[in-house]
Image 1 (spheres, rainbow over the protein chains, first blue to last red):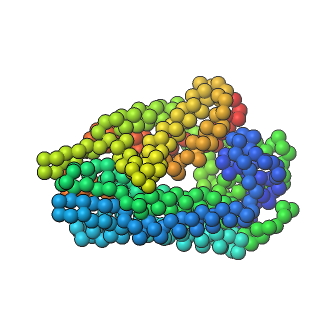
Image 2: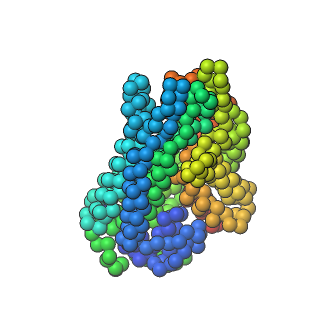
Image 3: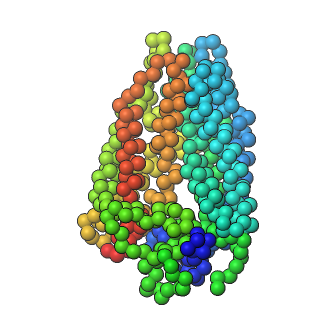
Length: 209
Length: 211
């Protein structure tokens, strides 16, 4: 049987629980086994995806404009944005770490914004044949999103650790908050996306036969 | 996995819908080392149930003890030009505790300490009666679902990578030595990963439903 021909629970007039996999007759409101609310597969949930995604993008802007870290040493004080931190790491020849921070804080958030928008737009317009590619993309987004939090933890550790009075001290900047919020909102956006939609194909509002 | 017709309600227990793509499968008994994958999208539906619930309970307990140690022993120590300063994990989380960034320290505390502990405790609560062959304790369903929902938000492993990056950044500024809490935290991550790989959601849900 080709992947496209495999019937879904929806096709059979049933509703599957996304939490535990148990199957119920269509119209059941709550899974009696695990207690999760059962949501039908429809594109109404995409509104939530867009809302969280836009919130994530909005908070990503100040996260890049304001300083992430304030470092004061004997020689003076310095403020670093996310990109500034990467540039400084490169200047000190720490290429590996610079690459990690660049990936986690700049590439991954941007790639996530694009990937989620693409998935949300493509759902309902493409055939089921695109499913594998889309599901792969969705899984990558879902898996990798949390790793953007690295930079927030780096700031937390640095500012807890480097408290040496006049010799050196590091304090968190306002960008840390907006960056953390941006990552959290994008994670919520990815979680609100219902991957079952990927396999519904162009007939999103089709009634079950 | 070939049932195109709606089944009678009492036979629905034999069916499983892939949580990812909604493909409908008929559940069959698995051998010890077999696992079931979704015929369409490849999501693992049923992990091998070879590991008993006791394994998972033991690992969850280990993880909780390690977390306790990681909280209170010194995590990192920094020294430069005769001055030194050490920091526990608690201190790292509280770094944001002044000014407008205060709520962030609460969030960091949640993500690296509180949520992992809640997940371990919930898992022990759910699995303990099941491992002893009794019926699940009240609210076990809610707690197990909670543990599953919290998974993306518990970020202990990301915290350790963050520590590594922070160490490199500080290296030029001062000397840093690693405390016992750092190693406890590393062990915690390995134990958590093992525990997650031994966990079969479908098996647990079935056990909760049947007993």
